Length: 206
Image (cartoon, rainbow, N blue to C red; front, side, top):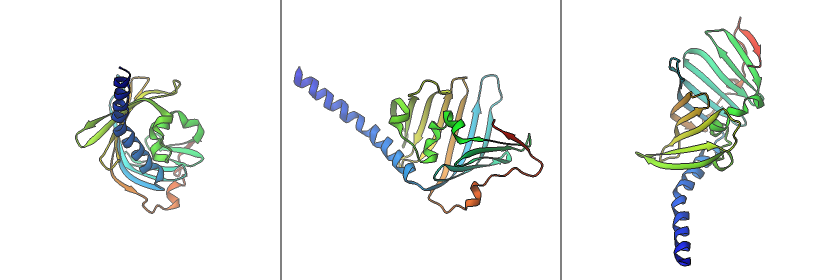
């Protein structure tokens, strides 16, 4: 029985290796990249509310700089210069900004965009299963005071994150679909400078 238990333990350890391999390769891909450009579609689904879908292009430059340029709705943008985050919504003509550290609660599922992805540090109950040629990874946050309860990543054979789903505590679900990813494209510094459009109302905090 002692040798049987040892054998089963080795088998169980070996069974975990494919999952660990996928996780480490995804971390390596994004944590090593200095810049990133990728198309996105973002869908927000909440009880008793109309589904909202938006799309555009995301640009990233380390450390901590990113810009979400929306083509639908046109003119909207969200981004960070590494110190603050900024949001402009044309429909309200409001330009909001707040300190980056004030947004930390929602950053863990998107940490791969900032080059700080660490599955074991941020998540628990991590599981992976095949989905066609891809792998679906499900995980729960280690910290209990976050606004979401579970995340799902769909990872390609090249370890690209194709989809991300965030299950929020208010029963809403936030989906991202990523496509046409480019690693380390040349990006102008001006992409990460954010100023309010002429006539926009400036709101501090948010």
